[in-house]
Image (cartoon, rainbow, N blue to C red; front, side, top):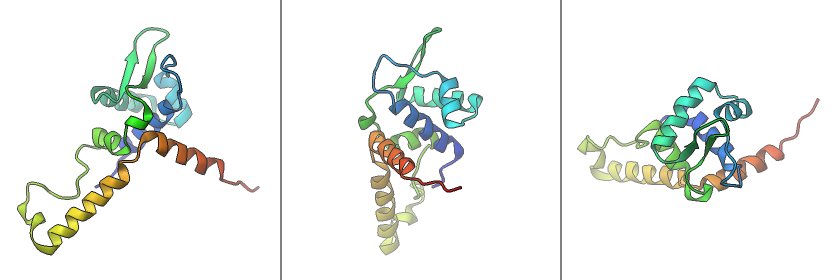
Length: 140
């Protein structure tokens, strides 16, 4: 499993959208791009993928923008990464040798552990990242 820039940027964009408390507030891709240092054209592609996967919704027009399709506590990091990266499996499900013997048990358990780690809600992930950023000290 490899998380590409698409997955990392998509996660940053979703975290930015998760900061919105109200369903009435919308963020434009330009705002997200500037706040999270994501190239605008790349972000537009990512947002389109997230929209197709029903993770974000959009409102058209001059006052339009994007918001989460569901509350942040109902969206998992796994769901976001899976929608952007495709299958996150470390096991080739088309190769029957992965499931044979003791090694098969090891690989299956490893994959289950990775999935459990990534099943954290977006709201919790965002809170943890904000807390970590707030605790950083800078020295000159």
